[in-house]
Length: 180
Image (spheres, rainbow, N blue to C red):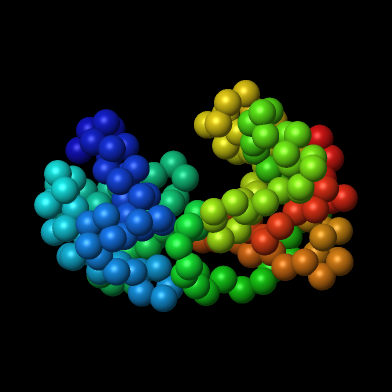
């Protein structure tokens, strides 16, 4: 499978597994899992044709590690970024002292006013390194990186989770925990 096809199918999988499974007529279970055979069949009906081996390649080579299989590769889900209500079965963990939030400069005034909001997602997404935050911010325009005092937030009783692909998640970041 060439890179263009992997990217095209990966974006469609992101839509289906994170936001809109009804696009192809599948249902995710309460933990966000979709049946792999059903996903492959129903994607094909929407002109996204791939085999199980190609799906495994997409999952294995996705640079953001967006997707995961269950133990026997019969189910697949997105690791985070959902706008639909699912339970990823994440356990609270202690974060590092600092995490980073990548955004575009055009969003800074809103963030300064309201804090870092999860928007239509289930969580605010944070990264453990500045380079990843720059890449995230670059997707939306001129990047800006905000430093989040996650250790202090945790000390103040705010919960953090770390998804299977290393993205740090929390519900909200108040500006008192942010520096630019």
